[in-house]
Image (cartoon, rainbow, N blue to C red; front, side):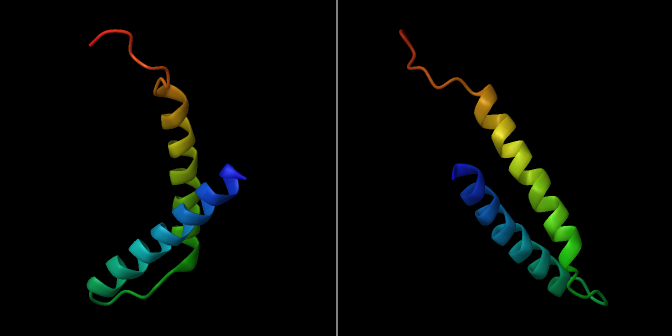
Length: 61
């Protein structure tokens, strides 16, 4: 379930970012597929980052 929600939110946020950047750039239109492809990459990067970062508490600071 965490895979679904991570992809869901990254998909929505990347699509929103794609729309806003496309609206601010003169002469461009909204493209759906580049945002969808980037959201898959962002989801994979999120899972890689969470697997690399240790989750155990630190014994001493």
